[in-house]
Length: 176
Image (cartoon, rainbow, N blue to C red; front, side):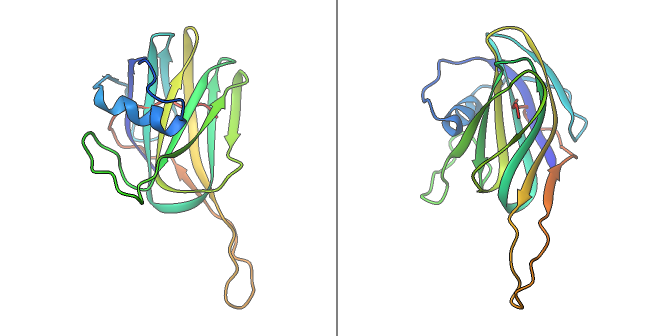
């Protein structure tokens, strides 16, 4: 897994209440890059007027339950967007390019968000925002892949794709 982009941006007037749409809304704004060493953890400071935006590439299509390891103050909101294709400004939308996502409200301190619904994705887009000043650490991101049965009826072990070697792109923030 690689972090393609991480940056802070001015918090917008949200055009949609949907987490997936909120994450994509920020792509039109250049923002300020956050120093990323090619992998998580990623640390950034945000406030009521600035968000953290992160794009994570799992390297291949995967299906399973998204997990996010985060350290943030109570009430910090993480908008998660799941995409099969990388989203860019002026990218052509297709019927197969849905915008799925979730929202996580951090309980305070280090926590792990584990999705209750399975998702198919390659890219995880995160937008983290708070009602006050907050230092946010995204310690890890993973997809706990679905267990499958082989033709002989044997259960294949579940695997986990982790994002640990992010390459530089634009930051997005998230809370587990």
